[in-house]
Length: 154
Image (tube, rainbow, N blue to C red; front, side, top):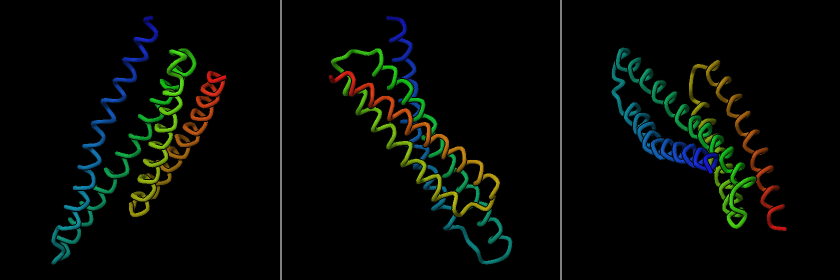
């Protein structure tokens, strides 16, 4: 019973962090919008505006990347529930895997679109490569979890 309690605690922690990321996503969007509204009437203002846009863009890359990481973590919990949880709730694990996989994929789209306008190409290359690895792991976990669900239905 303690094992399930540990998994539930981990799941709740991830859920809380993901809910916080909703607000972070809003803040990152607002930061970009505010940066684009900065004045650009002279070289100093233009430089400050460009820096603010770049800073906000990096934040807008990091937020969905964190969502990717948290969603992948949730998939570990979901897989365990498909393996060891209540057999009558196995389809809930399947739905959870599908949703978490979609969260990873959607967040990766946001990482990539925001990375396209970020000037630090080394950072971009690194985070896109890490994102691709997370995406690959999520696809694998989704597949494994759905196989467990299918077995549980027969």
